[in-house]
Image (cartoon, rainbow, N blue to C red):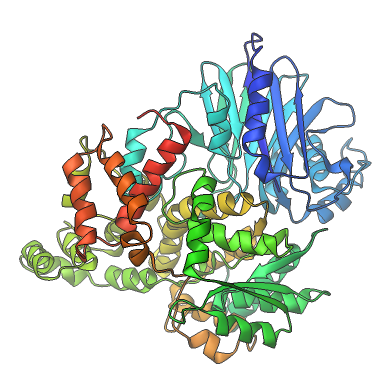
Length: 628
């Protein structure tokens, strides 16, 4: 787990690129405190910051070279099946001229490079892991970059004026001095409505993300991007497995995924909230690990917000070395400036992740497993049941004057959900998938239109995901999984997990996102996955692993008293940023201030999240001195 940077220019007039790559590397020093490296030839400059997880020796430092020095590589991530691939590469390949590869290190880095030498870029199809890596061929003057299937590890880039810059974080590109620090107004519109910008776009003009499961190639100034894995290909039932056989398969795949992710040469543990997903991960870790598992729960003294008692019960059941890290809201507030400074791409939802990651890192842990992804795969959110039922209620479309009913509902029901229901009733055709974008919106259309001087269609990305994610009638829930994974999970949860954990040099691994488990879960038909109870298929697959009260307790999540903070402890900070934001050239000043005043006046349609992400955006613009 590390941070990578790079500059490739077909023009050899690049005298300032060495200083630029050093600035880029320095900007992401937090990602790799163990070592740094820079290499360049006439056209390519590569940088690396290392967080040592596997093979802690200097032999694993990067940039990493092939034995003949032709290829040089930088890599961020972990390859979980590197030991199996290493054994394969140490053998001659039958029916070919490929001789056994002689390894010099115990790193997964060398396995990736050796695999590339034998199989070319098709090697990525053999990889099981989270990664973003770049390989430069010094002879052919060709660059290849690849990103993992699920998008756990990020890769940002700009290709402009025949120069490619890439890095693990946007801040590295900003610090290079080689890009225009301009905001993307279309992306701002999307961010205001969805608290994020969906890849491949970013908040920055001309800066993009390489999409999950994609490869970028650059040679002689020609840039080509191709997809090697498509998540939409797997929503078809495989064979005719019984429910029991399906449960057995889920258990096998998840157990194998956890076991693969326990390979490390540093102290590791697991986040433990006491919910189904994190408890399942901890239970399986205890089952397959020869060492006592360390678990971490961040709790609050206020019982309303604390899940500590559930985490403690799981820790006792599996005899873990449990760390309950107690925080007061005041502790959180003290660390909030650090959390805001850690934000690489604006996010209204990342501060919690920073506090949890820092507390875990301070306890002596360098790698932790997370339960992220369980809800998306196993219908854990209310949205799954809601949209399954909407899809089966075609009679809504024949209700006379349903649009008028929607307007009446919006006027009488003074709530966010009332607005959303009204907007759904106004759709020409009502079904779960036409309604999906409305579910993820922050503002009703009237408030959203008022905020922006120029109107952009913020729904384009989500509508495109819906269009591409076609399934048959047996896999409605899998289609919702596709929506959730490709929108909120990849563009909020995974991005926050990476930028906030790596801000404190903590590696986070996510067993639920093993691509083999993802492919199988998406292939399971609705009748096996329908959530009669919380994540029924997952729970049944675990057998008696989890206690009943953990399985059946209400879903809580990691909650903090944000509403009170924004109106009291953080009011001056918030007000200063809101006033500044209201003066930005792309928003209507009166509309922004009205949103803030409605929040202060307890308007139920303006919750704290509807103002906080505007504050975050303004703070980010100021921090990075972005031109608006």
